[in-house]
Image (cartoon, rainbow, N blue to C red):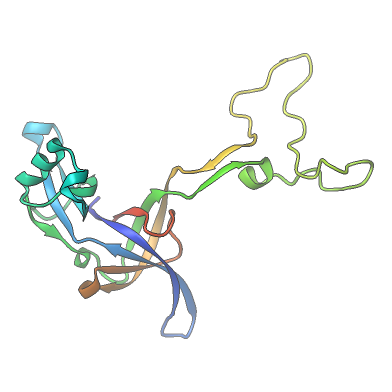
Length: 205
C-alpha cells in the first residue's frame, strides 16, 4: 500500500453541500523525501523508504547522516517504508500530499495517547457492581471475581484487569479524504485519528 508520513495538527469540522456538519482531522502530510529504494535483487522485497520532518545535524548520528546524504537531503525525524507504490521513484524524489485525491479512502495509523494505569471500568468497559446498596459503599468500580474455586485454582492468562492503557499502535481504516490543500501540505480526513497533536501518523491508501 502506497502512502505518506504526516503530522496530526488537530480536529475541526466542516459543512458538506447538504449543510451537514462533519467532524474531521487536519493532517500535515509530507512533503516526504525518498531516502531508500528497496529492490527484489538486493533486499528480497520491493519498497520505498520515505523520510519526513527535518532534524538538525547535531541531533543525528553519523550513520544516519550518511544514509540521508546518499539521497541528497538532511536528516529526518521519521522514516517509514511503504510497499506497493505504483509509481517508480528514485533517491531524492519528493512525494507530496497530491498523492491523495478528494473522495478516496485512506488508513491512518499512529501511537495512541497514553492513559497511564487505569481500572477495568475505563480500560475494558466493565460496569462495576452497578448498585451502591447492601453495604456496597466502595465496590462500584471494582473488577469483581477473577477466578474459579479449587479447580482450576488459578487465574487464566489474558484475564481483563486494571493496567496501563494507551500508548499502542492503532490503525483507523477507511477514512474518507474530504479536502486536499497542496499549497499548505494539508490533508483533511473525516473522523478522528489516533495520537496527540503533533504526533506522527502514517497514511496509507
